[in-house]
Length: 497
Image 1 (tube, rainbow, N blue to C red):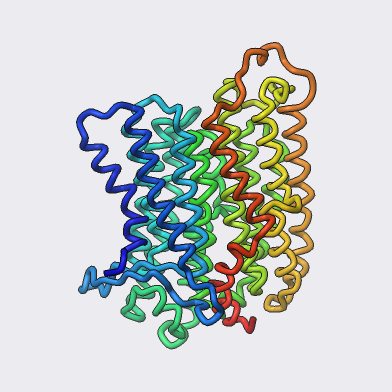
Image 2 (image 1 turned 120 degrees about the vertical axis):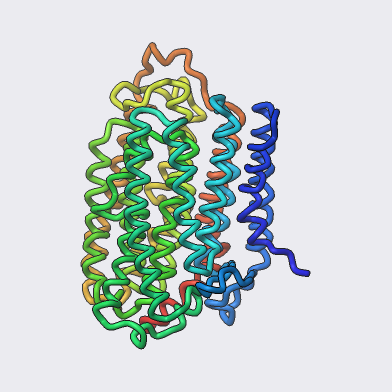
């Protein structure tokens, strides 16, 4: 009997969370240690899946570690899980950030049991999105994520936390309505909810051209809200700013990636002709994301809001890589999402340390913190190097792949123009990262920060893990690029790649 790896990875955190919620008496420390174990086991299992994944070219597009059982016969829906080169990087990312989010939350003392229960359920919902191969199952996990994230922001957040939590939920529900409509159109037309089967069909035989375009954009709008793409991005700065640190890390690390992953899985795989026809419009949105996001980032004075807007800019690179529709560019887009999850996750985590220890988030009221917080300053600067795509970091190889692939791709005639404009985003990224380092950590120290503590052992541990992955992928990208290529190659073949 084979081990149901994906079921265990997906549901172990939620099952543990339910047991933990029903357990009458648990100390705060016991809850934290149990949560750590409930995230460590899925990480170990996902590493086993990663190690056992067949990366040979003959397995390109083949789903591995598949679990397929009848679920709702009336709807022809199955409990269908599996991973390929598109989903495996995000499975590893989600389980890794699950462990790190628990460590980042180690100082949480308010309603400890509830906090970690919601955190574990959130991990299950995100993991489920990346391993689901049935559209109904995919949608349930997609929507399930709203509940824990709403409570995490509205109870353990700061500032206008209720407003930000509600805004996030409304935006995502709005997007979910479009996704559900798209799923229903596909189901009524084909009678299938199986993602792999639908991707192998020529939908031109089932949908009229206008309905093909409508269905494509229903999916695209739903996923663009999550990514987030202009003009649907406005929930992101509020949610990031007011969320607790671990929730911000998960938001940046994996939640945004659900949008880009779903675009590749559904929009590109099922609607290649519509993709090619409408790519110039979407690439225009990518340019706006990159330039507008970076320009707004430069104006921010709240350090969390600054990192949030930088994510808007970086997700523009992802749109550029996907919708120039070249093999290298799409490889770069997936790698960019993985790399951004690590780098921006670390930036939010270490910013949380700064805010917790200084009780300050206004950049104009900071300065000279490197003297009181040298370890924190070094970690922030190293993460900043990754965000600036300095060589030897994962950010470098990801952005080089996106830009070279987009420039070389001939699928979209105007792709080179969009690529050249987006290059400006690299310059602006260097500007806002260096300016932030200068304003927060350099210069003369302020008297009010004389007694501020530096990062402690736990904070050093999770930061080192982030940095090891960032530099590990930067120095030896093949460790994950091999996997990504097996997922992207079949998509590129749709466009002659």
